[in-house]
Image (cartoon, rainbow, N blue to C red; front, side, top):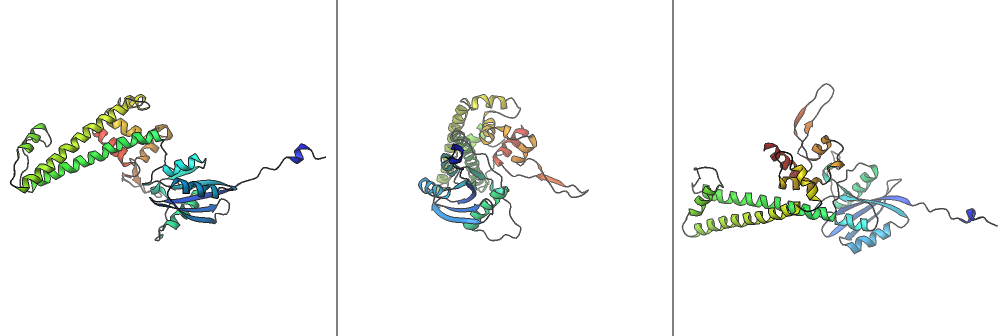
Length: 304
């Protein structure tokens, strides 16, 4: 008679596969390589919707353990969350840190997907931090304020360049003070020229009103958890107020994921370029890589 130990089935060992995905608005190019040999196992092109992704992943992970990745881009983190809901690990890769050969001149979706899978298998890719849905909502509000700031600056240039072309330069003080605004509103032109100027000035005033509303919304969000416990601490530093603190919190979120201050500064491109060899050492200007929004905010804070 067979014992219970002899009747016990041996566990089925699953093979490991790496899946690279080149994600676009309408479709996804998928390449899967074997975890041991690194050889291409299969390729697929599917529509970018949850049902098609789920169907393909159920097919690919039959007898396999999948490790997926794709480049961070305009499609956000939606695909990563679809796969996480299926308990499939998916890394979002920093595009600027993907290794590239000097002689590589051909770029296609098929090559990109296969390259991602192969480099992910080799451990050559750098992942980005994937925010939660709550973190992403707060970040969207703060980034909308930054977008509107650029729009306000653009409209100010429209008004000033319109006047400059007509030799009207304000010389009685600084631009955009209350006195300057009174000067702008007093100006009159003839015919269509006056219509153009009035519309440009009205567009600027409309954007400034939008800016006030969105800044009020950011300040209101700063008073809610989890921001309420972090923003006041950052405001203790000189040059940092509510808006600056909200940018740093929404973009970096948890600074403890950086082991050292140098890693944090490197993430924002605030470390010098360096090209050293032997006894020769050369350091240049800052690298300006990584999060440009945080970098600009910190530089402006340092000016204050």
